[in-house]
Amino acid sequence: MSWYFENGPESDVVVSTRIRFARNLKGYKFTSVADETELKRVLENFKGNGMVSGLQYIKLDDLDELMRMSLVEKHIISRDMLKQKDAAVLLNTAEDVCVMLNEEDHIRIQVLKPGLELEQALNDAQKIDDEIDEKLEYAYSDLYGFLTTCPTNLGTGLRASVMLHLPALRMTGKIGKVIDVINKVNINVRGVYGEGTDAIGDMYQVSNKISLGLTNLEIINNVKSVVYKLIEQERNAREFLKSRGIEFEDKLYRDFGALSCAKKLTYAECAKLISMVKLGVSMGIITEIDSRKINEINVVSKSATLQKCIKETVSAKELDIKRAELIQKIIQR
Image (cartoon, rainbow, N blue to C red; front, side, top):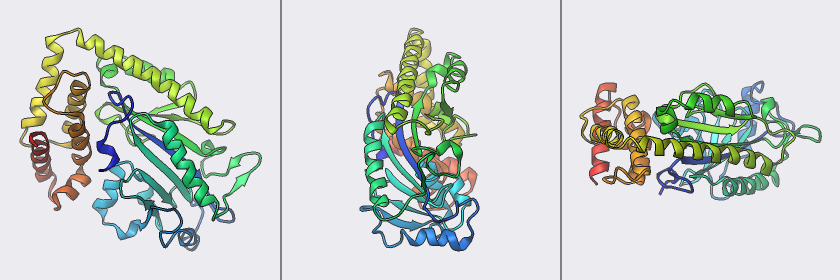
């Protein structure tokens, strides 16, 4: 079963954890200035599925457009990677371990976990990093650490990210103030797909701003301390909403009814409904559906992944109908 259907520690608020290492190869130009020949040379080091045990080499050009977009929707690859020629991934079957090749850097090692599991994700990523380091030489400076395309990744090259579901802070009008405070302490709070994206479905991504001058453990501890504060504030906001009694419960059940019975749903409409139903399930108010089904709906309702599930390409209007039909099947299952 794919990792994104599962729940993990603190899963009432924390959706997922991501650890990512940025690395470049010594003697190669960064991808931002490398020509096609050099980018192909980077890929040659990883062909044959033998570089990292358990991972399959996949050239992005060999995948159809829907599959590539589905990988983005599931946070397996970045949107920026779609623009890059001569890009590939090393990916496992559960899709929780991925090495992106020729994205912003030559190598982006990524491990994803459900819930709050920073230490375990870091441990898994370090094993992959060590395995690659034994076979290839990284670009490294005694002064600046791992050399990366973006200066904010210098040092350890670590980006520790946690995805949180914060609907109660938004509903109580506190989310803006909370984000402003956090962004002042070397921690980023961004939308679902990173910098410059919106918080679709009340999802926010919390991550470290810099990695230079800090150890890996210091970075994840800094991120974790902020995440725990957000968890506490979100839970307090949920208790406040719960004190409203029947009015709040009615709002949640109306949204559950719309998600369960609608004949067509745009993804934007669906994301808002999923957020409210997920909140109701996490608080023990909505009991007619469990969290795993909500996780599944959240993944398969996205446009490219949905079209892969129904195994056909349809118009936007038809897709809205198919989305509602598939959601009803999952709920009734």
